[in-house]
Length: 174
Image (cartoon, rainbow, N blue to C red; front, top):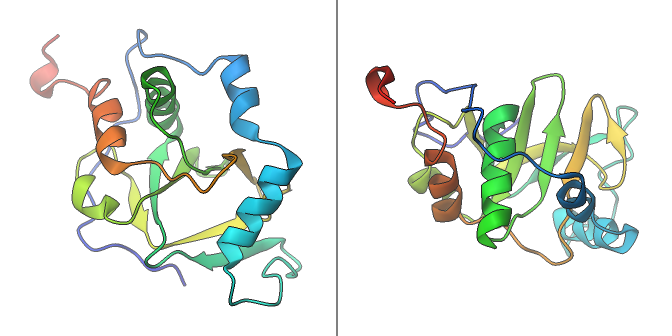
């Protein structure tokens, strides 16, 4: 069962302006990481105290608890893609990102404390755990879009700034 962070945002936006940045093919390729990066992320997700692989289930998905290590921020795909592109343009770290195609969302692994910094309407869901395939594999419409070469996590303050750049203006003002 996923541990949900209290104080979930009440709504979300799903469209971004046409002027919002998009990920280039070069950026997408760089985000994917190498096979060694995938192995490092898998080992980090499992944690040093676990001896068995959590991905031995028939579904190929495992529930990974991030309590104290990371928080999961789920954003609708258009909002997340624009935010990730802005983070990359700013030179800010982009941590692991899980694509969940059945939900049309991306789940970003952020530094602990994201719940306090991300209580705004672009956030669909916040959690302390992630249901995911092993990095480098896909299962049930889920795959890792971003696998950084080190244990980088997205910083909540950077993500807020990137998201606000494309947030709709209240009242429809331009």
